[in-house]
Image (cartoon, rainbow, N blue to C red; front, side):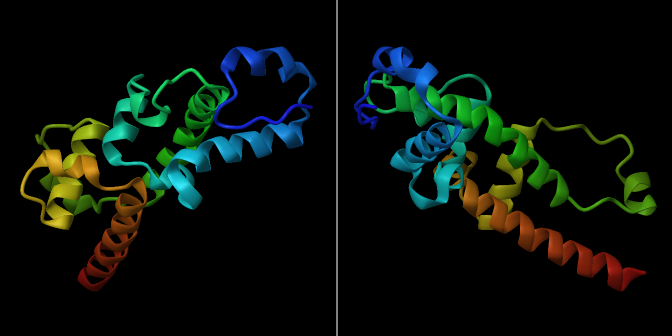
Length: 159
């Protein structure tokens, strides 16, 4: 099999893809993600790039030319990863107490994007929402873990 790297075109890869084993495909997928985001994988991407990609704008997860097999594989991998990520975020969101639910009655619902921007701006003390775009997804998850722990402790102390 020819060497497959970040310079391999999507067209060249399509010709040999039927002959790629599952193990090789997993290694290529890992290499594609790490080639752009490092060892952290998608957790090393910026929040701005992640939110854009969640809405179909993949510019932040493509190389400059955007037409390599790594770009195609990275987009496919992102679609798989985003489900895992959203599950992590859901687990890091404390369940509101009955009193909190009652107090929240009548408040406006926020989209996922809005909740990320509001949370990060407040947590990191950023001057504006645009500054959130430069944080990494890993920064966000770590902050969510800390916030979850603090809220859980606070809620347990109130009971």
